[in-house]
Image (cartoon, rainbow, N blue to C red; front, side, top):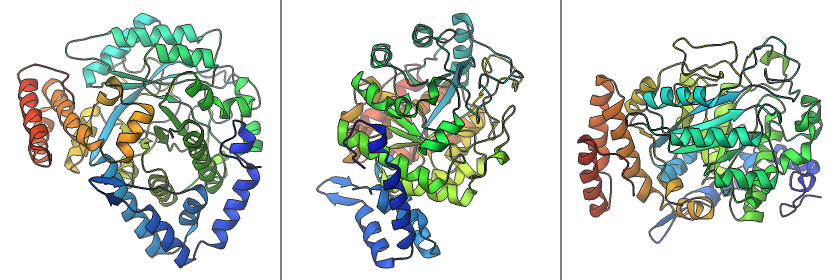
Length: 479
């Protein structure tokens, strides 16, 4: 029985409710009167000085996703862009993954790190090697990373992860500093989540991979990850452990995309109903080629067009969430979905263990093929050429604006009063310390134009002052 307030995975991700939702969506996919009501409900609305979006429940969202009318799809895209601008403006947050270890005891059939893969070299970074990786990332200009490691209680215990986080935060190389460490590791206990919270992580990220229980069990035949309930209930334990920023995601291509989206949105509804805080981020990876992994072996792959629509519908349904797209996707796909709701992207990524400190891109330990292999500078310049602001900001996390405090700012639209000038200042830092001359010139013009858009004259004046100080060598100003 479906119950979003339940703490049991089989009740807040109820299989029959998803099937009923898919049937409802199929029956109403061209019901123009219903679709218009759904779109009207989702539109940004002014309440005094605030712009608020109500979002959609999983049934309403699936109706939009299932609709086959071209004119409705265009409305969906326009609304997604409108909501993205209302909540996040034209900022795009930049991050990079950092792979610590590919030792893993699980048997996941879509991942090259699975236990039975004898072809891939197993690597685990020492703390000194982590230091070299972090320096390489800092020399690129990164301020925010996502730590990744396989599940292996012997090789990758929680103590190793905690020591690694401490090492990452401790490194100050030239003007570089990693200011936010997000963590993507296996589902664990409340006690270990408390340890991660005490280590001052940013967001705890865990992909469900698939919400379809039977498919999940088949795709995870061995290892601790085989336990569907323990994995699916991880975010509740994380929040019990004090982590209030969590990130959801599925691996599109493993199961039917409509089923996955319904489950993903039900999970978001559950977190908000129980904890008062929905997912801080939602990621939208698609299965990609890797060592021993052929995407064509999976029968649920989706086209670029469907992928774009999924991104737009998520933005409409969960307007407050940060949406992440990685270098799994190529430049053209990333360019299209940036307008449809994506607010965070990786840049200059290497998905191999120890990949950043090597001059040539290693491929022998990659978790997946990187489709977008541009440098960070090229990604930054590309964003600015589209009149988007590459942001290295971590101010909300460091100022304690996380969890329900972040959501209260974001849902009211007030987060823009902080994020826009903060994004400009972190971009100025990047331009001063790391950018090529061409990128600097484009960035200077963009910052000058964006300063004019800050509505509060006091904030604008302060931002101008701090930008001047950054040009003189000072760092780390924030609202």
